[in-house]
Length: 143
Image (tube, rainbow, N blue to C red; front, top):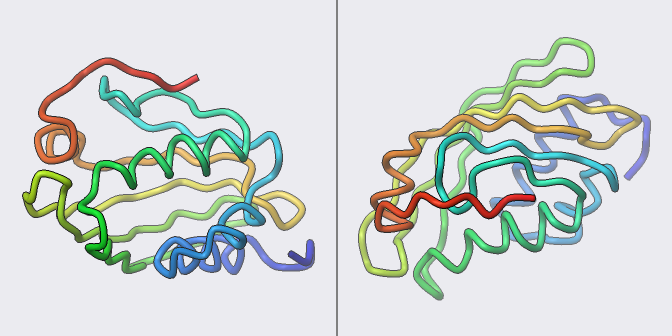
């Protein structure tokens, strides 16, 4: 990715890559030492450190919670940028592995430096995530 991309374009490109399941672009969007913070006390809650850990374990692990073969529809609904900080809002609609409907609205506060995402603080309905994707599990596994 060209370092000349502005932060808003970097985040838009990343969210569209998630939507399109383009793992190469997803991985390329992050700095090697990036960090992603997810709230709550779920198995995915905590700070995920390192691009590969974010892509393979955090995001990849969430994929195992969804019904195989069923699409997860990601839609970017709003994006605002101020310097290196970008706030993006998106919806996630899919089917959990157990068959329940998963519909969540999420907001991420991204920091982009030198054309790559260096940090994300995500906010979502963790109660919905817990009940639909984790059966109310509450032990964090982030590192």
